[in-house]
Image (tube, rainbow, N blue to C red; front, side):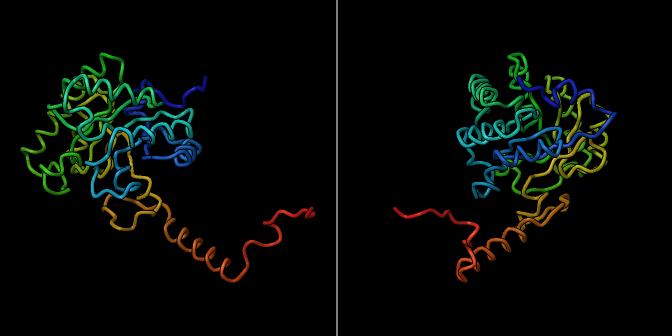
Length: 270
């Protein structure tokens, strides 16, 4: 049995000692490379819908699509701590459906699941944790509620909104979640939440004071150039490299430069 690099106890005990690194992955080789790099946590995100399947948002993503991605990630990263995003309507309909779907992800190879929402998911988190299914919470901007909130906007700008976020963070902590994603939250508010709860916070567009950071694979590596949020730092420009390579491939075919002698198999015809 493979020994995991990271586990829940290590994640929780990291708070105040060192920063956690998390990246989204959706495929075998992405997970394999993230593990090779030494990433603390791999998140099979429902952002799969946007960056892999071409959906306008995360709402159409299904359990079957997520399940395939989780299985692929586990085959690629045998030692990594993998979290699976619970897609829209995979946990909201009923407690029993939430348990079944979260349990399915663990059978697929995930170590935990992530659920969006505040007070409204309190009972769901408590139930999953009681059944032995670790849960990462997610507040601030919650993309699965885009039709309610109307637009992707920064959270925590008003006193009322700030207090709501702090209260929701405490509710999620008390529900038994082992960590909490803060998305698009004013830095000062994210810092206050991080100081007020005992579980690690993972920020995405939530500033410098969270206990860890997460970015989407395609944003970090410069593959997605359709839109770059302010909080993203591009560590490469792979889209340019990939397109350039594909153009060279096309050119070599047209000019007869590929395949060459070293790319073909030879033998005597019988």
